[in-house]
Image (cartoon, one colour):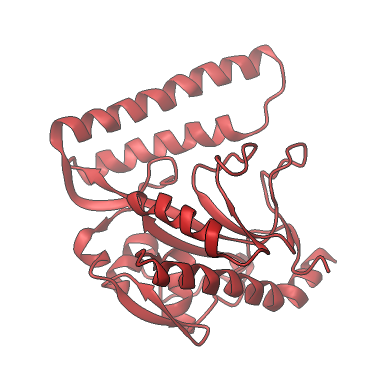
Length: 264
């Protein structure tokens, strides 16, 4: 029943997310804030000219230094139905990056905690990007994956028990260690030829050469023109390998358990 509902309402959900993206684009263009389509959204633009037919989210990237400027401008200029969600504006939220949420809708995803009052409307993810340390790519991936796994475990709801206390201590120490090594590598070696999302968001250690990202290009997505990486082909190969191949039919599904595109 839920699967049938998602299929029937998916397009309406996508179009509501497109509205959010268009509002973000207007803020960024007005205030000269660079950003670009990322991940499945960029893949959809290249392969389908819009959303991947079964996708239910929108991802963009922005340099970390530009995020505060965006948050300030968006709070001032976004339509009132949209909300800039971050740990500062919504203290109970656990994600270490900014989302723009639609107050008129609802989405339920794995990991959502309804004991916490953070906003749960449809959204666009804005992933912050930084330069990576000048160390081998294999080391970058190991650090990012270790940090991401520890962060994921710590981010889940915990109950009072000896086991949960041990987990919090062990994975807290592990995450702190990986972060310290990352910072030490930056301090000793400086930045190298790669960039990617901050380590707290880079679960797989995906990275891109600077020249594949900038100068930004443009791409058509759902009939509108949006910023894209300089070399979308290289960028998507970094993320997905042979992205021209469609996944098996049983893997063609979105992230949401349930959503209401209009609370009306």
